[in-house]
Image 1 (tube, rainbow, N blue to C red):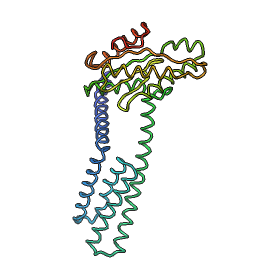
Image 2 (tube, one colour):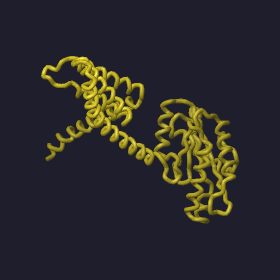
Image 3 (cartoon, helix red, strand yellow):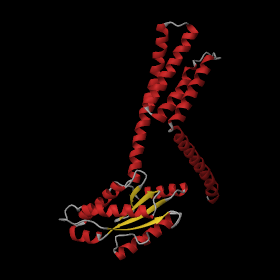
Image 4 (cartoon, rainbow, N blue to C red):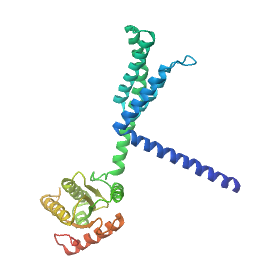
Length: 302
């Protein structure tokens, strides 16, 4: 029994490695084909190759028209129904041209060839394209659920760390701002957790309102948010934090009879305070807690 376990484990490892390699190659191929220019070039090459193959007589009398299914299928899977049907029409037209060259340009005959081929290729494109679009829609929804905080609709902690990993690879300047809601526990104890959730949503809405398209706002804890500001220096961070505080002062948490939210904030700059997510978070956290203790309107480190 023990010998069987020893010999089976390597086989399982090999199978797992092969599966991982296959998944990696498939993922990389799909990423390449998502680029429209590359995808169109590949489909055109495949259509031309299929057309050239159709020029040569089959040794067994087999119709080479079936090879056009490959570029049609690839186009439909990679780009959806629209491009798949376009590839199907081009393939059918090429079949009609070759039929006309071989047997004389009889209009009815050519039209019949084009119609029958388009029916075959079009059905293939329609089936695979519809499946691909449905799959893509599901993937987008799953990605949204996996990367979005359900209460605030901003990015979640997983999305934040993924974004930080990308920025670490890019090595471009950015600022990390850690923001903590003041006295959220007191708000919960006084008005209830539903009001506390409303306060969290208020902060998320204000943060989203001041972020640029290149920035990221994420909720990373119960009452804690982060902002990742690309190409921001200390002065730029202070401007953003002051703007957030000013807007929060104008907001009233629903159901509190006029209570507004205040925040404590701390920041770290890439390069100056560290180059990894762990280092930057530690510095920004320390700055935020210092700000909370001092109750000043400005960031202590900045």
